[in-house]
Length: 438
Image (cartoon, rainbow, N blue to C red; front, side):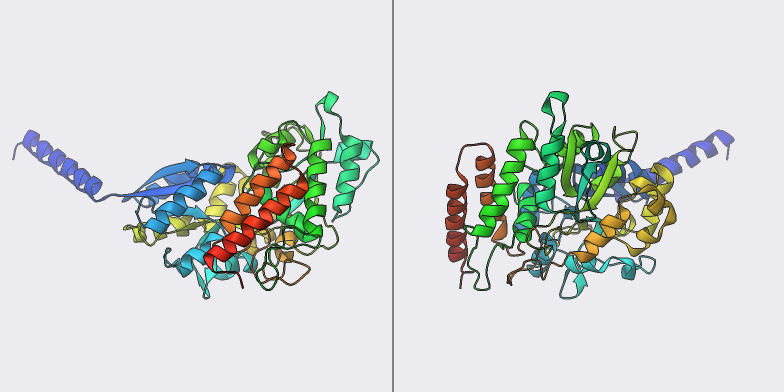
């Protein structure tokens, strides 16, 4: 055969093989939230695609509220829009019980026993894991050490909400662009109510009593929400009602907030000198307490799950294993730096000397996660599981409605008494309508 014909034949074979490979390639659609850790996952995704040449990743990145709505609609209707979804500890057991999720299938290298027990339990149903944790968190108090020192204030490892208010009053200096405290103000069960619920817990309250009667219009709620509104209206930034995690992260890292109570996952960004102006001035403590420390710090994990409706389950399992493995954590540390490692998921992370040296918040995060008990998060006994939420299907509607009413109080459009009475009425009607009330 002439050389020219041989080369043409070989080229045709290569093209045909490439075309066949492309035809067999699997496109995985991944729905995720718009935060730093997920952005890092996208940056490193080519590493996965190189190791799995038959799989191509497509990303649908959404804000937290929109993500929850889009994913819930897709999974419940079994439309198959997404192959991998980012969900949390609220959704995982409820959706698994409804048959909406596939059981996660770790391989021999995954090391399930290395997962932190509270995180693993919160993503399981009937003893089986239905979502693999990408990162986990509790809540903590972040503060400017320089501002507190100048004001003659110091925080113990676990401050009280009274101490937070007193410190915020001393360091609040809006003329200099410094606000005493930043807290979530944006309404929603996973936004302002994540924080407010832990405050209610700390002030001795609960969502429901043992007869499933809503307990919103109560003295504990009035004290907790009153303290929350006072903090933000007196010592918070303008427009606090619009701020959620990302907005407050921006304010704190720009040096505009003296105290911030939010997710432990914020620690890495706050300590990143390329991103944060206060990296060398940040201090960390456990979430504030009130009448009790019970339920004062929340427990959450953003996790990757596979909808039962996905026709590409094998490829999806491979991706979830990769993105939540110890090897992925090592990849992040090597490529992006040890402070970029997703935390709050594995025991081994808190035995990593390089991480512990770089992350001054690591001990606080580890202790906070271990102390959070979703089955015993309130001073009075409660029938529900969850620290900053109640793991029942009715909670999304009740939590969102209550968050809206509290947002109106913060904006000065409604009285506290009226807002809590309205939320109580709605919760009672929702529980009765769904047949959950007893």
